[in-house]
Amino acid sequence: MESYGTFYSSQSHAPSAPSLPASYADSYSTTTSLPSSYHHRPPGYAYPQPSPPSYGHYSFPPGTHPDVIRSFEMVDRDRSGFIDDKELQQALSSGYQRFSLRTVKLLIFLFKDPRESSLRIGPKEFAALWSCLGEWRGIFQRYDSDRSGKIDLFELRDALYGIGYAIPPSVLQFFMSKYESGNGRKTELSFDSFVEIGIIVKGLTEKFKKEDSRYTGSATLTYDSFMSMVIPFIVQYD
Image (cartoon, rainbow, N blue to C red; front, side, top):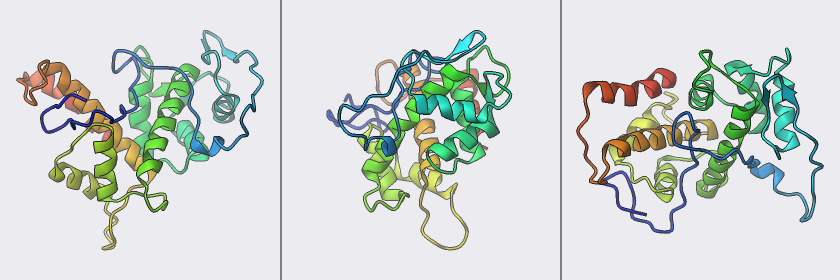
């Protein structure tokens, strides 16, 4: 991987961070990866592939896994074809673990159709979001060395570095401080907090790279560009 100032690592073997959706970046895949909990099925085990259900003009991408469809349908009780932040929180909390509303709102903001004014997503966006979370889950488990279901400061540093982001220690400390419990115990991150940090780091880095076309690690921004880059993450983050 190309060196990118103090943000990008020089590891040629580092995997890419999970892609953000088309509404944010240039493109994303709608292939639906599954959480690792589904990967124990015997080789050759195949699910039937019925036609994905349609919701008016909205439908799941072809090949969407039945478990993904069921997760959406379970929370879309009014059959509107859309789910809001609380419904998505319920769907993700049953599929992965407990997700905070703060993380859920950030995910919806990034994955929703940009033409959609409300904070909600349809089947296509849900399938893409689920796939992205499956990739983040793989990264989280790879660096959760003690299999505690949480990662500490050093595991976070290694995880971000492993996907190409050499984050300064002061920034890592800042992120960890957002999740301090106040009881004096060592701060550790659950999966949803890790996803939130990973998406923010990737998202802001990708935005910055657009302004730093030569990959020098520095860029000149107008005030409007800076605000447009940072505010969406801050608003949803808080």
